[in-house]
Image (cartoon, rainbow, N blue to C red; front, side, top):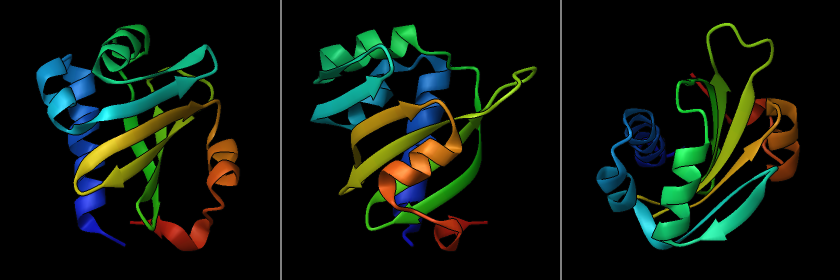
Length: 119
């Protein structure tokens, strides 16, 4: 487990929630990949468009980490079910982020398990 990867994801998520696109870009690689059920894109322009389209009022719940992959459970007040995001972190930069409908799907997509959970 790397506290650096976790710190990068937490800072990235905080920047997203605050609408701080400058910090979001600084924490992201130039060729970042962003994707969710509505589509995918690459680069900072795609990141800006994606950031404007996602609900950023979520909080991070459980986190799982292994070999540069971070799965973060995303919870929001009043929501019935939590979503999840999968991050690829390389040298303290997010190189990819993919939103999933729920935590189980995100874990299945990454082969991470409860053994990879951080508390």
